[in-house]
Length: 391
Image: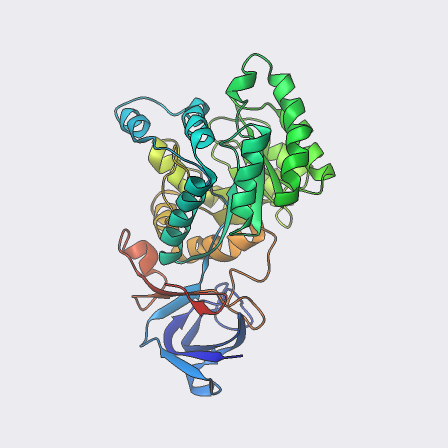
């Protein structure tokens, strides 16, 4: 097996405090040895062992590959007109999803996969090495199952989101759609998925419906996650904590009781914040500072989707979180790497430590702080994914 030494790293973020300074485990003048698809050694460049090949980082920063724990990448169509109208004064509502549902149903498998791969390549070039993605734009048994089948060919982090909105086919029978989502559709989709999700929101599914859907998914072996409290106050966060969900995603409109519940469940349920959605809808920003000060575990993710957050850029989300959500550059980077890994209940990604998967990004900068300091600049110049130079 070939080994690779990445040396002369100016600043290395390991996310392992045992290896370096502070919560980010910063190591200066560092080196990393990759053996196959794993990190074999981390330390000072002067102490690095020999390897088969050598890559000179020339004093630039290296960070763990980003872990994007919330995206919607199996879709077809375009919602430029909706975005244009919204930026001209129309507010966002969950109903816009129906436009993408129609386009996705009409697309071929090959078209859906090609679109997925295009977005994955785009994300990888910006440093993302682990991603979760969902169904939710088919809303029929056949279309939800094929979306998950396509996704599962490219990531192990696949989420069944038949409960994105009530299918247009069941507009007059929401209870019937819940029965479908928890019955025939779940049976067809569970073999391709690891997670089950529900959009618990006005215009989508209420608390009782969401509990029924998540409980059925858990009985089928899927782990719950929840679209919670995005557009308004609601039961989503409390439900996520009650059911031991891996993450409550969005968390924009929170009561003190919601924050307390997330803090008490910090070891189980991560608050995943999705600033791209607020940017693209001109909505209220999530208050990351409030959550962090309360002791909540926070992740950052893109929510990449064609309607409310059409960005695949984790660096962009970091910059938004620092500028508008009260996070420090260190906190934002941790949340976009180790935090995302926590939201996926993974310990092998989001860190650069011996035994972890060899997922790293090289920055055209001396420090990770430049991700927020230089927003919009393509700072990621090289990416290793599973030990292979991928970008």
